[in-house]
Length: 331
Image (cartoon, rainbow, N blue to C red; front, top):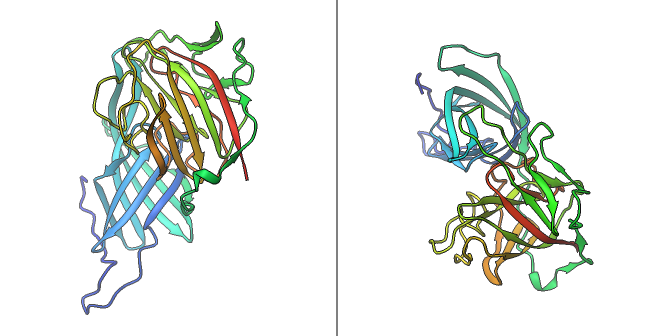
C-alpha cells in the first residue's frame, strides 16, 4: 500500500491466552458495485489477514495488501479493466481500489474508494454480501436420481436462450442442428464485445450432457447454474490445467487431459450435486466428485444457494454446441 496499515493481533495475546477467532475468517459471497460476482476468502495467521478473491472476471488471486484496523479489514487491490481482443484477453490497470470491510454476524459491508492513475478520486461505493453457506457433504453418486432429460436446444432456433447481457453484440445462431457462435473480434479496449448466451430456465442440481467443437485456438466455457465454469478450449496434447478443457477455471485441475484435437467433436457428461462436480470428457473421468470452493470468473452471482442457468461463453472465439440435454436431479 502507499500508506502503512497497522494490524491488530487476533490470535494469541501477550500473556499466551487464546483470543476469539476473527469475524472476517471464512469465505464470502459478495456483489460488486457494478453488479458483478465477487468471492473472497479470509484466513488469519498470527493475527494478520491473508485474503484471496475472485473479482468479477479472471481467476482467484491474492489481495497482497490487507490488514486489520480495529474492527475494519482494510485492503487494496488494482482497479482493472479486462477486455477481449483478437489476440486474447487484455488487462489494463486504471488505478487503485481501497476496500474497508466490516462484518455484522454473517453479513459483510465494504466501502470502496477508487483512485485513478491521474489522481482523481471517485465517490465512495458500497458493496455487500454474506458468509458463504457451509459446503454440503460429498454426495453418493450411486444413489443420485435424475428426471427425464430436457432438450435445452431445439436445433433450429434460439428459443429458450438469451444473452447474459443484452447490451453485448450477439454472434450466436442456430445452424444445421448446432448452437453456433461466430464473433468477429477486434483489437483495443474499444473493440466490439460479444455476448455469452444462457438458458431462460434456471436449475439446481442436474446431469448435463452435450457435444462441443472448437477451431484451432478456440476458447469457450460451460457455466453451471451460471456460476461455475467448466473450461472449453483447444488443449490437445498439453499437461492438465485448470485453464485446460475439462478443468473448473481457476479452481480444479483435471485428473488427466482427455482432449481431442481441434476440429473434432468432444463430449461432456457433467454432474453437479450438493456443490460437488463430476466431469467426464470424451468418456474419461477427469473430475471425480470434487467440491466447488466458490464461483469462477464471469459468474452471474456468487451466491451458491441460488438456482441458475446453463450459459456458454461467447466473448472469446468461435464454437459449436449440439445435443445439449439436462437431467434435473430428483430429491
